[in-house]
Length: 74
Image (cartoon, rainbow, N blue to C red):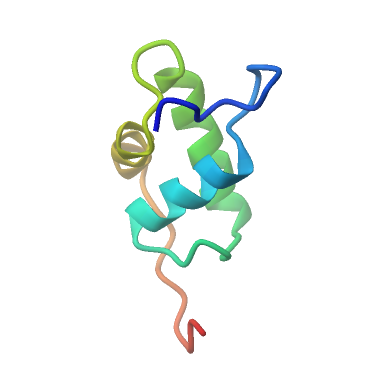
């Protein structure tokens, strides 16, 4: 994913955000403020060096993730 930036280049795009969620093992639609903050922090670090969903997910894993919620995903 080389187009992980929004058109203004200042934030991770919605589709890219969902791809990072998928790489982390969360449903693409799932939202949690802690995960969003971790992804945003990781994106800030990765934006100048790679910006792939895989790179951002790897950086988020180093920050730490909240526990996976229980229940139906569909």
